Length: 168
Image (cartoon, rainbow, N blue to C red):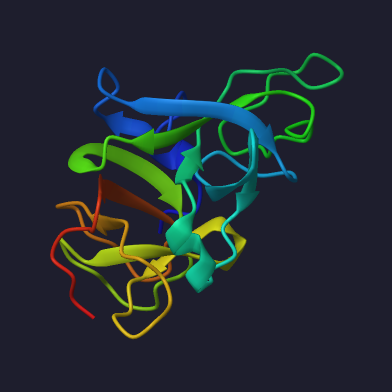
């Protein structure tokens, strides 16, 4: 069971496509971990996705890992939340949204195994959830060839403009 990004990567949430990645930067509205799905709620301010229809009209992306130290100069790892994200700029991965960018991101327990191409969307708390064609969310990514194992709270995704094979 994969429950932390450090089980997959220790230096970036980007697993494929680092040379093509598009990033914006800004301040976080609260203490978020790398891999959290955020939306731009004000100029240079990023907030954990609310999981509502309003997300469809906002720029969304994932909080990237930035090497940093604690107040006592201990190294912070990829699983640590930004405790000063409201004071420092962090990078937000926003694209490309063409299926060439693979990320390790935080998700809900999707409750059952998923296979390649399962669509995912942002939900409350900045997590990825199974895309539901009748819900208010937009399908923004899809699971990689490795799929998803029930109980995981981290999922590998390909970022797509409308996702891959959307299976509800």
